[in-house]
Image (tube, rainbow, N blue to C red; front, top):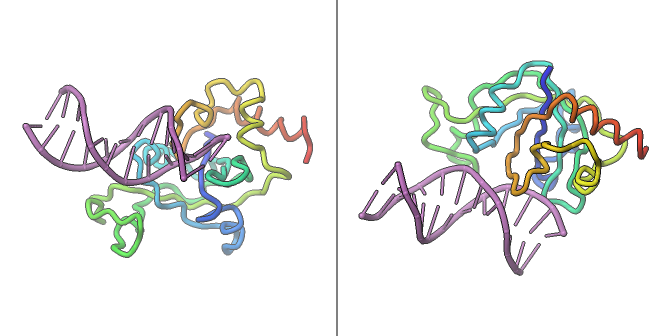
Length: 156
DNA sequence: GCCAACGTTGGC
DNA sequence: GCCAACGTTGGC
């Protein structure tokens, strides 16, 4: 199963919001970048993703989610009252997509961006690329295991 | 708040 | 198709 990383700003929508949903399940919408959208559409039911908090005091990975519904047209793009409204996206020809995710678990501690930068074995991780701004990105199985191993090296 | 990096837009 | 201007992202 492929692995992914999903970014969100906790002040807008973070792991606490997801955890508060019924069964910890919610729609992951609002992605308005073509490359990120293409990754969304490549996700398959059962894939797992790190949940990453950005634009906050301690940017980092805070949890793991599971993809429970594959890509479908993002309804927020059709809603004139939504900040992500895009009149170029229509139900007949949708431009933007969403998936449904379920919170699998919170990590026992935040794996901060700083820690990821310091850790060895994460060369090539898209999150660490200079100027990276993608909100949806793939994670290789090797990187996935390496990141989880950081929890054992420094338990929370 | 600053600013580097990047994607998108639109004039030509 | 080029590219400057602009808006956004996101760490610090």
